[in-house]
View 1 (cartoon, rainbow, N blue to C red):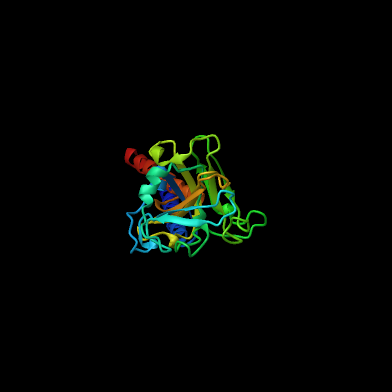
View 2 (cartoon, rainbow, N blue to C red):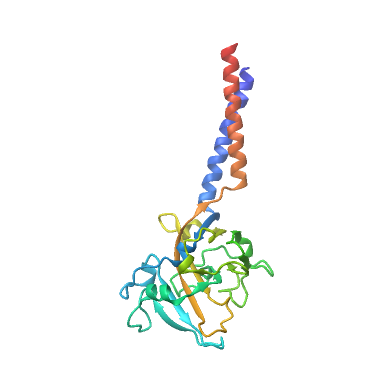
Length: 265
């Protein structure tokens, strides 16, 4: 009985030590996070403030237009922060009356550093033909929408090593102000990041852009809307951590069983 007790105690202590050790390593290393955003997150915008820098606002937004032939130039029209000599901002008023609806959304904040003071928050890599793709997983899309990952070193990528996810409406409803509360507009993804990119409150600033014509830019009203969403990031437990936690739990049950046998004896 004493031998069994000693072995069980050793297993418990070893399991707890490994869990604590692994937890310390995970806290300092790259980590997967699960993040969800909705139509409300996309359309929420800061109050117009031309005197406040865009990266100081909770939810800066802007829209731009293209020439009808889709060849540009891209012209910034309205913002929530006043820029490029715009006399008024008025993004909120424009969004309400424009009829704009996203049929494509991409998290371009995985790149294009500097424009919004963003960072390349995903972990980049040089996997041949799939640069940066392994750092992203699309978990959920709205009904009828399709999704994919644009690799680094692509025409639309910020650089050679960072990828980003894209959602397209396909056969689903486009996301406009009129249906932003529709519960079907849920977008979920997982991303591998260094925890240092998170805000002090544990949230992640996600930079996005989207179009009203599936990025074709060929209609009379070719709009692009972009901005910043501050979203809750939930750490995804590593498989090894779950195994060790299970081992510690089983060892605890064994200890209880041994104690009961001693009392019954």
